[in-house]
Length: 305
Ligand code: NCD
Image (cartoon, rainbow, N blue to C red):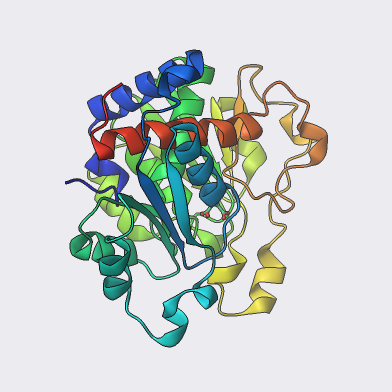
């Protein structure tokens, strides 16, 4: 039985397989409409979410399965003091697969060691978010047709942004990928990721506070929100929250072929004036997330269509 806690647990070949399944689902959704008939997905969300939880739910419904769960810790037995381990032991009796989001880094890993069914990490604190990365990868694949030879700008909260951490890990396996890391000084990429991934693999990267200085080189620009809920100090959040606001003006020097991604929710990082720009991919990215979650559920449940 397999879980998905960190994106690197999937090989590049397996990612290619999930993309192939997702594209087959997009081409012929009816073929998959009963694939998970009689199976149940539990969504255990100890932290708020809209698209991740709803896209997991939509994914399971579109596979003909059913969904149960909770969307905040306050409405679960965690409020009574139950441990994550006990919660998943119990939920394993009711569901065939679990998607868990938790504010504590490592909680889904602990859950996967205790559960009797596969556990999918739907975001653990400021750590990882592998299924958002699957959405990002399908988007890059459909927009660019390749993962090699890309310069990827990551902009915003690179310290707490778990989607950034998982995306760097995933993209670092492809040939000739370069990163431009753009953030305020206070929100730089954690040094463990620089050391363990970028430096260890000799992947070229630049670090700057100035988005416009790197704009002309970028093939992909991944904007992120400043992660308010991970700050200890509200004043610090208020000071940093609008560090980057992408406007049509700032895109003037960007490539025609640039793809702009954002895991959403957006606060102020991308002006709504960009939504109609053909380079804006963030709403397509949200849809892609559903297809990749469908592909992942099929894989972890061992369902062949
Ligand atoms: C992201 C997350 O939860 O980390 N959202 C999502 O899953 N699409 C990004 C964010 O909350 O900023």
